[in-house]
Image (tube, rainbow, N blue to C red; front, side, top):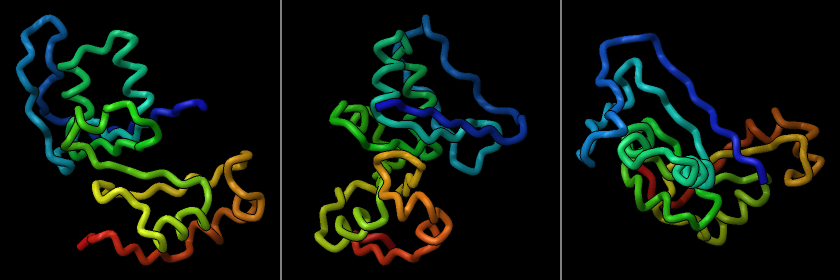
Length: 148
């Protein structure tokens, strides 16, 4: 399965630079989601694990992903979620009906704070949903997982 990393940036502003990769393991300051200039990430846990295996330092990974501006999609048991407790845990669904089943059965992890409906034109989304993305994307959900 391919992982996609999306990043969006706001207008430039005065923000703390990322930590150096050669310094000690001090923790970088965590920016609030409203602070302009810091990237907001939507990234799969497997992509973060791949970046780490490819040489991304622990301090840079912490700086970029351990904050409320990161939406961390839970797809694999990589242990990444435990490393970034400040990130917003996301569960991704490729089917609207799978979302309904998970909600109805109470199968949602209580740590999940966002849901992503990934209804692409691919084999993982039922054809009736992928051929009518606006119809299924606009349907309301009534989640009972303790959100206020």
